[in-house]
Image 1 (cartoon, rainbow, N blue to C red):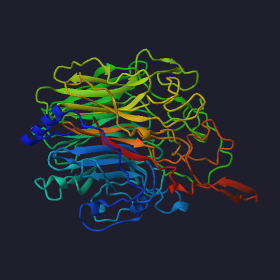
Image 2 (cartoon, one colour):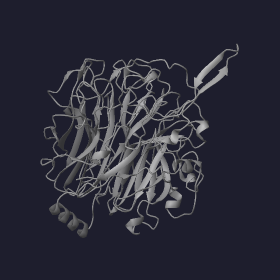
Image 3 (spheres, rainbow, N blue to C red):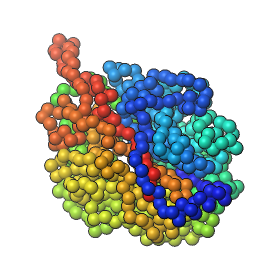
Image 4 (cartoon, one colour):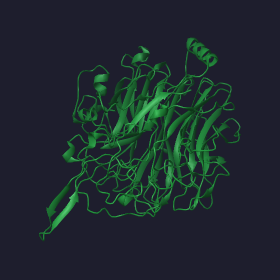
Length: 630
């Protein structure tokens, strides 16, 4: 998924030299989401002229939230990288007293110096956009997220997204998926420094049913890839996603474009009769064959497993799903135990957005835990995470039809009782999450045994990703090995006394022989900038949210990784917590609230909390950072 071919003898020679010289050295982390200094319109970035609007103005000062990052290096020029995220920077675009009513949208972050710095923008088509670009977008929603990015070999970049929320403010959750297109404004033969700079439209790939409260058809969990093989399939764009329905069923769907993303085929279901699946990822091998991997969730009949489907005709049709390997899941779960806020809140601190925590419907099972309506029986505070399956192929490898796969399952033999309602494998049991790797041979259906890339005695490894190009593999993951409170019985960053800490890091490793020679893990985050992922910044400052993935992209030995980061978050006190709760303020962020008074129809005085009146003070300053990988 999202991997890039290097073409031309000079580029290949450079790769060989880089391989002899050894891996790149991680440098100082760089910020992709510059919402403390300025956002520039994509229209202006392309040299079309000056433009701004209330959303861009707010994004320039917001110190807001970003998560679920993606990044992609231009296969024609490793100086050019494009990044994205769920970008909440515009939610206060009507002023603080109006509340968080503005859009959540896809970021567009551009670097022309190999990731040394980024200019921040938004993909056109957001609700406030009145630039000439806005008319090119078919997007019909008030929010967008789950960004994924792919390049072709002709200067074009494609941003995929799921989107929801009715601009009219109704409870409808549209659940569309779409692809935005960017190109070189001087044409496919123009200087590669201009690759992906000009926006030229957004195409809706599949529409949801627009039913309120997710009761209809909702498309989510996106993946994208482009064919760069030079075969008959070259230039095809492939898009996959999970389709949720109100009856609880989930399927993996797929569509392809043969005209550079302008139109897409009718969506087809890939997961057959499997009832519960998520996290599709797309790989293209050197001969143009298309593979989609996904996770099968276990039930009484089926194990948790890595699944794959294969197409040998450029994504036109696929063979039935094949189980590659079962695994022991590592899904953070607890029991919901809501607590009543001493006095109600008069105004929301968050717009509605599918995919946020605190919006999963009535259930005793909780995938994330925090305060008040998001409190859990264990008293822990933690972000949601499930075992994920990520995959890629090396489109330059003409000798093999290999698919490289990573997932963050439970390491066998590490399970132990949790002593609380918190668990990761089954009720009452927790285990160590590790990043596993295997290589699947698409030509004959065999695979290597799953192995842990960087086997450690301490710490959880979650949200892995992998990239392959020119014979070099790069993998990344979140790692909690520095946590002094680490235990399989507790969530990441939680101590036995329910306090949380800032010890989460990003690690990376490299291999050159098909994944049999992984290097030792190298920390990518600056050592003094490790994060506390458990800050309560969402669902009215009640619960943490880290998104659902990290990302790595590569071209030969050059690789760049991105992650969600909390180094800039300002810890504080939540005045609604009287007395202070179990985390002792370690998960609370700075916020300013006042008590409002009103009278009901009988003349009784009613007290309520205001919304946060200081959202720019750093309490919700969650950002996207990145760095070169080893």
